[in-house]
Length: 254
Image (cartoon, rainbow, N blue to C red; front, side, top):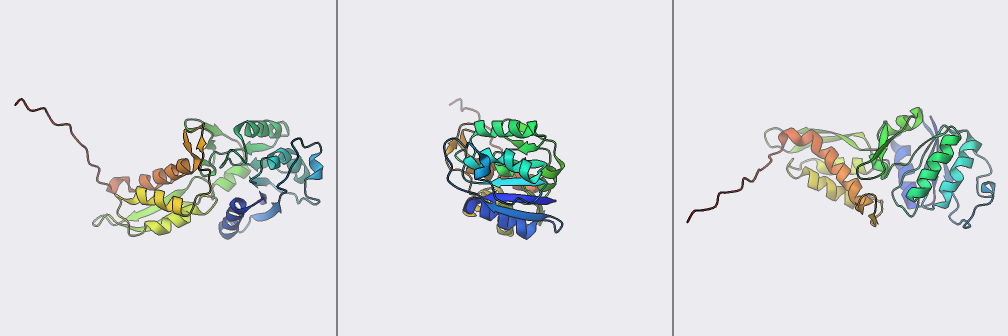
């Protein structure tokens, strides 16, 4: 699979470095450092597109400037892309309204588009856009990407006697590489503390999703992402956890 990753700063650079380090060998990754200044109205997208665009299957938009999203349909036509992945880890970079428009524009071109919010909610068939709403997509290219990068998945080995984590492997990494960082920090941790530890490690990586309150979630996207990590760590250790139940007492008659 041939990919083109667009970036404008640290957020995109981190994703690109992790993809380069851990993607399958048969993937080919091109990059484009996009402009960061755009007029209020882009009259001719060609003025901002790169001079030469290689043919690619999938465009990854990691730009921190919303103007880049408006270029994606024309860029997809130039490079013959079959799919576009444009995550929303910060509404300032890709507002929800523009994300809806982008999906419509690309659909009219016959190009699949996924706009996961946050990026680490992406699976091989769907992604979050609000707290209770997931969108499905049909694209072998985005699904292929999501086999390796997206909603994190862990294989955790627990010592049944000590109930300590003795090994934690990443089955699917977050695109930014956070899942590998979290997995390394879980070894030696009690299963009763593992989810809280995963949340702390996620924040310390640090996650680069927005810390502003998002209206679609009533929470920050960093916290939404952190909860995804905690849920994914919690699932494989569930059989080993000791869960305490508090039973309300009866009121004394005295």
